[in-house]
Amino acid sequence: MRFVSTRDATRKVPLSEAIRAGIAPDGGLYVPERMPHLEPADFEGARTLPEVAERWIAPFCEGDPLAPRLGEVVRDAFSFPAPLRRIAAEPLPVSVLELFHGPTAAFKDFGARFLAACLERQPHDPSRPVTILVATSGDTGGAVAAAFHGRPWARVVVLYPKGLVSPRQEKQLTCWGGNVRALSVRGTFDDCQRLVKEAFADASLRARFDLSSANSINIGRLLPQAAYYAAASLTRWRADGSAPAFVVPSGNLGNVLACLWARTAGLPISTIELAHNANRTVPDFLVSGEWLPRPSVATLASAMDVGNPSNMERLRHLHPDWRELARTVRAHSVTDEEIRVAIRRDFGEWGETWCPHTATAAHVYRNLPVELRAARHWVLVATAHPAKFESVVEPLIGRPVEIPKALAELLDRPSQATEIGASLDGLRGALLSD
Ligand SMILES: *Cc1c(COP(=O)(O)O)cnc(C)c1O
Figure 1: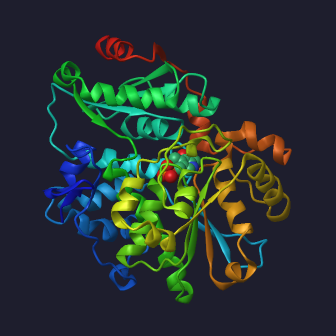
Figure 2: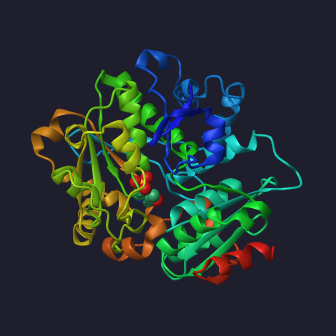
Figure 3: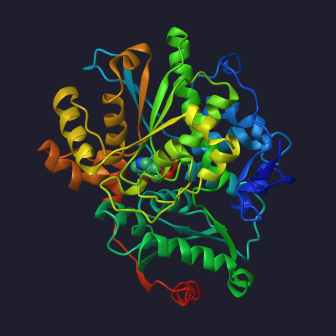
């Protein structure tokens, strides 16, 4: 199996190379040259998440130097569970897929750890570590820092917008030390992303450093995400032979793309609903067919504040006709007020505590026609632990949210960050001063 750019199907590269490069030379995103066919029978005997992940990823690795070590990679990456838990208080069939049991308590841990585990097993020049630049609006940076911390062949430089991430998210960016450096940028998330792009385009920085990116466009972050959809859908399939439906909180569309890929390959997944916050670019596009990216607006579900989702290029590659795409998935926009109502109501009625991102999925589910909710088993995808967003959640439910152990350990560590201006010279200075 090889991978092609969304913009040019003629140049094909193996998985390792697509992972190492991050983005294709023509500026496009890597996608598999064809989707493998995988049905439930292909997963016979695979029970645990690493076992399912190995069967899912194996066809994508065929012929790649990584293939013989895939078992190791998935055991390293999938070192924590993704439980599918029935909402006991709801009579209709609905479950939560909890993706927040990793080191930084958000689903980004799956992709970041798989990427690190793959890069770990590629050849390294001991005199020249790989410099991983990552711009973050909150969760990606922490997950990448956690996944690469202590790996001597890598150094990580995280850029985040000063004052625009939650205090606990900031802690997860700044608590590492060692081979991880946090840069607090006087600017917005868009500035951080621009600086990373400018650094990649700068010949002198490229000559001086072996630059690599860990942003969500990397195929090494997408493939492992499909594994938890495979595992969850197989659990339902084995229980009663049915294909569950998923509601996925969405921003840059990486998580939902993984769900679509799993379904396209043949896993038993029925409906897919996208839950967006007030950033309506995708819901509007599916209605009008006009792609109108716009600046992002700040919402309570900040990790989904994306006005120009980069993975749309992969979605449109999969379904070039927007009408076909609109028949394949549905997208909804959820306001901050609806997020607040969902958090309060589901705590009261179900005893469930959602993070603001997960609350968008809960809102979308509750607003589906009851016949549809009764007709299949629904899965709400829980993308982060509510304790990461305690300043939003606690006032709404009127009590403290218990902090998971991994998160508590990070909160105890000291913070270090270097403040820089939002210019390439600021970033250059920080990179060279190390
Ligand atoms: C990143 C993130 C999202 C959005 O996921 P995409 O893959 O960008 O669509 C949703 N919720 C949380 C908690 C996140 O960190």
